[in-house]
Length: 153
Image (tube, rainbow, N blue to C red; front, side, top):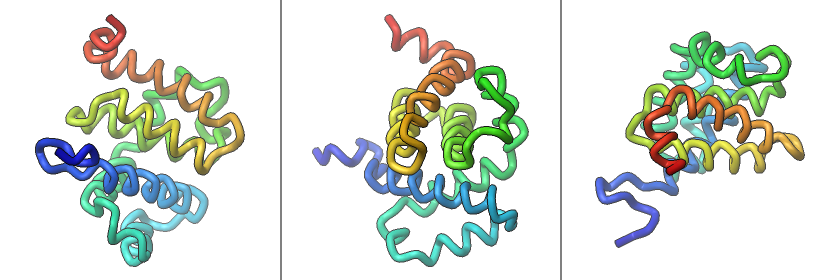
């Protein structure tokens, strides 16, 4: 069995690449002010998108775009500042993970949390990943409470 592929055929490495590219696209969307469809189209034509899960990438971006206010409201109680004051990369990571917590129950919360921390380490500020971890751990306890409690036993 291939360790980068789930039994249902999902390529985990391609999903990880999709998340990394989605964070970059969310950053571009947040700072550039373009429509999400434009951002998706721009990123779709990049060379390394060929090895990413393009459908997952688009689902993440369209989902964040559609639910951004709900997502922000979900993690806002766990922030030490206003959402708009969070570093744009960290805000993109939080929005992406919040979307997956809420709308992708097929992805275990620990996978979402780990992927968010790894992306924050790669693209964020020096200790941004610890901030991301703290906020998302509390959001997981709230939005994925049953799964979260079961994993803590």
